[in-house]
Image (cartoon, rainbow, N blue to C red; front, side, top):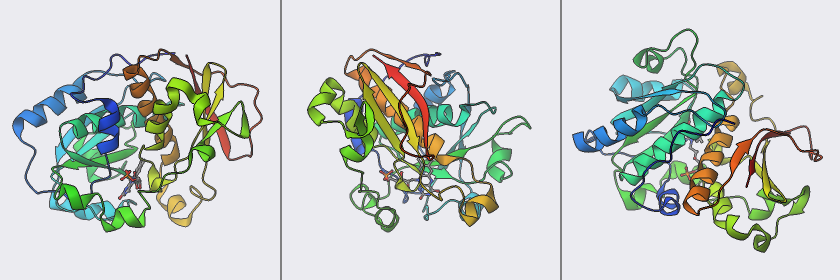
Length: 295
Ligand SMILES: Cc1cc2nc3c(=O)[nH]c(=O)nc-3n(C[C@H](O)[C@H](O)[C@H](O)COP(=O)(O)O)c2cc1C
């Protein structure tokens, strides 16, 4: 399977960057300084393909007052205050476009975290919006989600803002709800994860739409199988149907793959992504196989 072109060059350990990242919803209105902006742009502009081979393109745009106001009408939740910029992306539809989009956009957001910037994923219906015009979306592309970006207003308080508490952002599912040993229903004992324990912990700390944490990972010998455990009713809700919201939980899977691969790389754990669904019984109709990491 296609591997991403290169590993980002972070200034800090990826485990530290992942731990520092949080969904920042209050920013200083100060625009990002030129040097920092340029480093971010250089990283964003490096051609990259996701693990499934799609090649989204990304763009950093200044936020206007109109964009800030438009956000809520586009199906996003939470107030975003004072943001000076957005990262937008466009991708051509393919079977695993959203996973690739999540994977590559998250790398950009981690790079931004390393530059001491705050970010927040925003999922909505952007394809017909002013954001689509800003990235000059072509008829054959979609804009699955955007991210706000800027200087964190109050680094201490920002992490404990109301929306974060409301979204239960501090809450993460316990290890035994996410990780299984050869079959669903058999939790993976932490000591059986070996060197992958830190890799799995970094997946657990990842962002996900409405903090639903839909990743389920199953250890099978030297392979790790990734499944999407869909949240019941999440896509069928009234607003989701009305807004024709993209399948945000597939973006969450791409983010999980990003955290997994970056941490494995840093820990010197070699492996590659393959799509080969194992003959393992799934617990219900809401659980879908995505990909496996073969070490
Ligand atoms: C695909 C995706 C879409 C999201 N959409 C929104 C959104 O519309 N509004 C918002 O305030 N946060 C949004 N979030 C942020 C999540 O609520 C957040 O990641 C989660 O609550 C965990 O909190 P943390 O990121 O601070 O760790 C989104 C996250 C993801 C991954």
